[in-house]
Image (cartoon, rainbow, N blue to C red; front, side, top):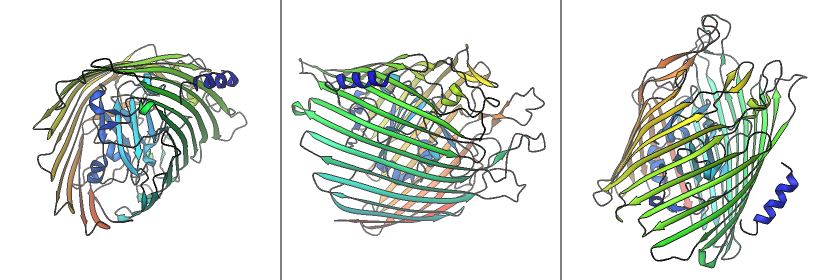
Length: 634
């Protein structure tokens, strides 16, 4: 689509609007995800889970992927040890079927549509929200399985310094420092964290159990300026540089055929996200308009392969709360988004390598929310996307929430449609003699619904939620060597999600989750999607909240993985081999000597369980970590 035409349309819509990216000040009762503006949880009819600051502290993990194992509906698979490529699958969807936002910015690589969450450390994370099911109406392409929203720590008034040192098994060590400060007009935060570890990530001992190193350095920050009482500017930035030793695969037909093997393979990546948001509130808060600019840049060097990609996004939206009419309250939001992506293969170096490719998208739509008597909430969104390289898309979502009383017990249901666009690899290929792209590909499409009940008991001390879901997948993109095609068959997903939060006293809290997922395609059960998953976290605080004890467990039921061991004798087709179920138990203890100084001890995989998510990869055994945190504020 012509860029001048897009710019003209954006200029017209700017009279109505201003964005979608960017985070608001966090209130525990508000959801940032699930609506164009932060909304009370009970008003959202979609299935959503939140890990707040207390949950993150009690679990104690340093990798965001480990936290997401405690969210219903989310399957996590990691290739070996720390830093190994890690994929997320929500409700049985593919790993590139979910949008991952960091402070409102889509962090996925433009080339693959996927975010390697192994690079995301928890040092600056304040909150994680997970919205499950097709969310195309609000979030556009690639939100087919759901949306994960990562909210980082907010800047504070005054001056505060936070630092942390940690050391543990597998040569693990981490240092983090965060400086925040400001006044009522301007606040800023800058955080730096470096984490290193060494572990043999494969089961191959041909090189004497070679340790594979991982080095992650992340610099993040944000700046918030209150220009006037009505106008606020927010800037976000995050840069991660990660060097990881990896293992290759043996396709020689020998004894290690189809398995990861110790060699000199590596993966060096650089990820940059930048964002700027302007928010204007008028009419005593009844009108909110936002304008956002976002840039994502990724670069990957894998020795024998490598690429670079970037994404630029301009987003505008404007929300209006209409005057109340009796017990009826309405809020409307119009939005528009222009996105341009580019991609270039760097390796393998070949004269026939496909040149830099670009594509753009213009999306626009409407969200309308209705509240009746502060009990019944009906919310709908509709989005149109004009793509210059493939078929346009129309997506939508509708959700309903009804609460019986102010106690919070409620019914909720949602229905939605979403698409996932072909990746640059799939659309354009790279070296023509190796892989040929298919420019005729259509976006993958999904429609799904869920319904459930959230029950509140004992004056809010116990909250549980039971949800049933179904979704299908049409036009799935699959390999047809040496290219890819859209399948004419349909894949189905269905299941049950159960979560419970219980706080019997001020000192004790318990969180439990269970998910049953039936994800199948015509060829059989989908890989790396356990049929049964469960998690449990119990925390106890005592001595005026200075001593905190926590224990957690993650259960992954039997699952299947692609197995290439008989690839050459099986008609060049990968088999599906079952991976045994496993349970991992972890403990976390912290003691605060004062408001400034705290020490902690964390043991992961307490009972030394074999907990590999993929065939041929080793898993970290029982590992202990000790650390110290220091806080200074004035």
